Image (cartoon, rainbow, N blue to C red; front, side, top):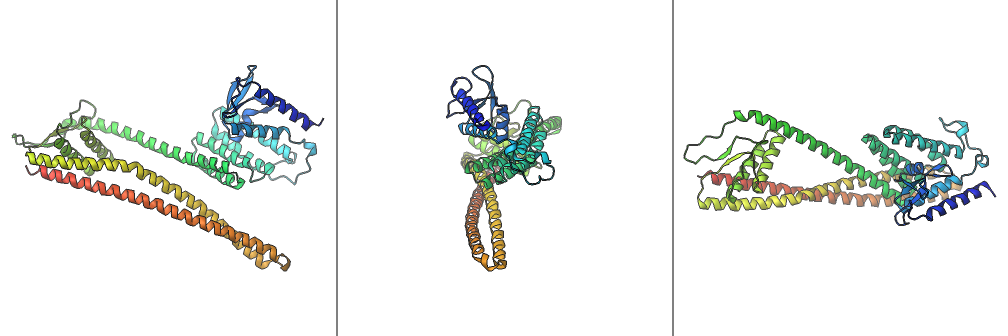
Length: 457
């Protein structure tokens, strides 16, 4: 019995043993599977790591270490890779390879030796990642990529898997520029491999990277904003004793906002009536627009929102004396302002979503444009070759030229569709932004009318 045949039988026995213990480390086929940590000397965890598949350590039926894999499709990929490694022919049966590339010794020039070399790199990189050095792990894995290309070819799905794993390690290390580059390379490699599932997976990984990076940026900005707000509160507390309230004539006609801030201590109740709330919010909104800093503007805007909601505020409000007619007018204008503000808030997520769709469409359009440019270069190359070809090769090169021109037509059509999609997304974003601006202008106009009405007293 040949060595390869014996290896296949041993692998089949191991897999049969796995299926015989559904309650000990092996899940149902729909959920995933469990495998012994070592199969014929092969580290299953290292195979999962190389393929970019999530796994975890569990105990098997005999309390021996096993590896759990949660996805049935990933289980099949791991089994196929183990089967391929075990069934690889020995070095003696491999025909001589061409001279190795620079940096690869003659002893490592055969496919089996090259494969063993990148497996060793896998193990070393995995150890580095486990020890908490994902940057060094990713750097080491970069050395494995040219070996994988030599063994399997530049368009093999494993190339994209390695590039994606390198990107994950760089992202974990906080090296966003390197992570972005390798995520993009993984998408390109997957497109070359032609596997739709891999293309979708790696495009999704790139999109999630962009989303997480944006979330981190917003989190940093929020942390900085809170720190600045706390510092501002401390500064206001120090200066509060130097601020004086507005002057009144003693007859109760003076009104407005006293310059008495209480951001950390006891606060003031909001105005009690609807017209007082509307007028106070109008004054606070005007102060927000006239603020000298973004932090001051945010503070006054938050106070205005608290007034409308009937909450407590950090400024003292002295209402004017108005006639019942004036109160009704201001109350009516306040209701319109509140309605416009609700509509404005409802538009905010739609505008943000439209902006995200526009950015995604622009990325798609740029990708298609690159493919169109590549098709153009193919056509030019084919035309040049057809012009310079001898008569006996003319028909063959004319066929190639026709295929290249057909590919270019498809690329041009795809680019046109991508540009239309981008234009539609940008137009939607512009329309929503215009609606927001119009609502802001209407709110500003109504608030100015309320102030003018109050000043008639």
